[in-house]
Image 1 (spheres, rainbow, N blue to C red):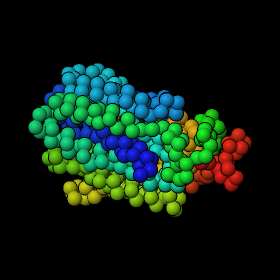
Image 2: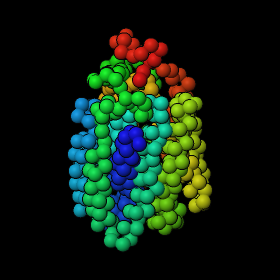
Image 3: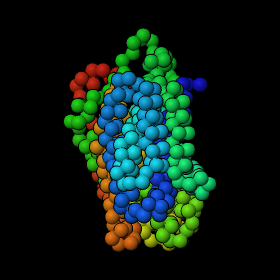
Image 4: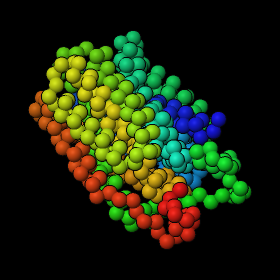
Length: 412
């Protein structure tokens, strides 16, 4: 078996653990609020800092992955996950949540998305979409399994012990999985996709540098589109459970709404990644953004549990396509050599926008008592991200990169 699929499996495991902890926050939120008598904006603000922290740190972890490889970067990040989330289970004051979640846990979470995606991109070219889709199924599995597990643990041992159990157990899994994360196929005398081994003893991995990519229109259009959709991307994971409780559903039913996002994502990642290897990334990304936009309108207009489950599944299908296809486009457009730095820049800058959505939704809810306005605005933002794709074109390789590439090929 081509070792690249082992890397995909390891990336799946790392993403599953990191995002299971993150997506379960919406289940813990009402429990923490009830015990400590905090409002939802107070609990949403540290989560916003967490998102800003781990996405911004991707600027660093992406470069470190390019230089030192993913194994050491991800292993060290597991310590942050264990420390941050286990300490959240001890909080009594708001400042503690800012420190433990917004700093310690953010350091740990920063080693997941960019290092894992950058590594998978290096191992695949022809089947890049499918490989990224399979690896990122870990994110959807996290949304499908993490919240129900959190809900069950909360009912059995309380929210504090539940956090400690998930933090320590998950971090052990991350450390084990990281040992299989090899930087690129060339370091094992292999070629991407399992093709014939390179004849050169020291093969050159080509691609754009971050500095070169910054001078392209394509990078900035991708960034603008990413920021528009990511401004509200985590809003359902933080507030959909609470929205379900507001409508009268019990804790497990509310957690199942987030799980439905995960199951939709599992379907979306497998289908979207494989199809776009054949039919193109941009049409697939447009379809995914459309699903997200329609799902937000569905949240705003639905009051029954069955409809909310359906719209949550639809949102998960669209969200999964977005998270797979943005990294895949970076690999297609800019090659493999510096993809960690380029993805880190995109995720670090664009991801900061993702922090504002859940916090703003909490503020709006505290003042209006409803999420309807927020859901409609989220649909509009995804429509804007879709519109920007109309102007997106593959960049022309810079003169230096053209010399490194084989004739007729723009990137790896």
